[in-house]
Amino acid sequence: MDNETAWRVRSVVLSTLFVLVVAVPLYPELFGLDEVTPLPQLVAFRPQLLALVLVLALLMLLRRSWRLASALVVGLVLTGAALTAPRAISDPHPPEPGSRALIVMVANVLGGGADPEQVAKLIRTQRPDLVSLPEAQVDVRERIEQELRGLGYNGYTVQANSAPESATSVLVSATLGKVQFTADTLDPGRVSAGLPSPEPQTGKPEPGQAGVIQQTTTRFGHIVVTGGTLGDLRLIAYHGYPPLPSEMAAWKQDLVVLRKWCASEVPTIVAGDFNATTDHADFRDALGRNCRSVGPAVGEGLQGTWPANRPAFVRTQIDHVVAGVGVEPSRFKTYELDGTDHRAVIAAVAVRKS
Image 1 (spheres, rainbow, N blue to C red):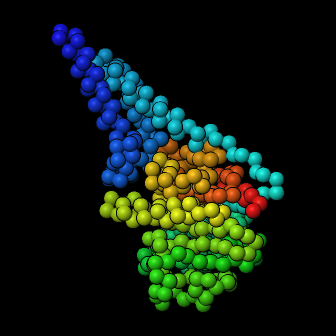
Image 2: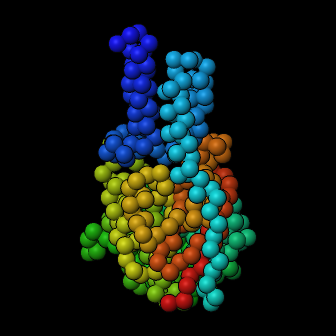
Image 3: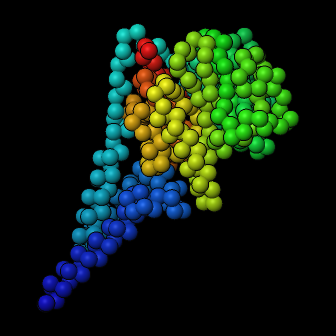
């Protein structure tokens, strides 16, 4: 083998190895490594990583010995861009005649850090039918309700444990009628005295109802809203556990609960802070065939919601409104809120006649 041939073989081998090294953090699920820290955390920012890798690949073209590796990496990035593009260019399908329009809002209030008046102002402006408030304890929810006096919103809170971030609250418009609030619990009989609830779990809501501290099937509290004028539709306020390096099992378990909701044939809308993006294989698996995240479905999948205090191009979308069977995504937009690291989400959906 002459020197030129040897150089070409070495170039091909090294270029292939280089592409594999680049591909692992971009697509760890292809290598069975999507649960190995820090890969799940990096994957949350896959679009940004693709842009960064593309810039580096183009710079590599300046060196003749790196051009093959650069071309292979550019091909990898373009493939990733093609897979990402639908979430930015998809158009909503027109709702079926007779469909019911619903507006859903999500606002992670960061344990009460968000300005209640600003949250209430957005609610007054948009008039959502349901407001999911991750990290809102009873007192936070009640401060928002005070700002909404006269608008007919009814609130409820479930707190999974003593940690403030485990609280999830919901506000429901009076237009939905007399709904019921429930939660899937690990032990329905185990309720602490931390928060009073005159009618725990299945009671009809009354203004100012507090909810309970109880360990739900999700690590953080969630609330299932049914009844009233919803018919067979259920609305779920949800807060998924974050993919912390030492808590990956908890992150996955919360997505397993989401998978069960989505696998059901019951018309379902799940709204909240999922701490997962559409680039996470576990999140996509949880959505399955029945569920879609509204943002990507209507071409707004690159509107980042976290961290809100960073420029738009480095945010990622972890706050979702998920539409299940019988629910058609229509609109998705994010809004700034002071005092929290999340942007608020307003999504519109059309619920088909049952």
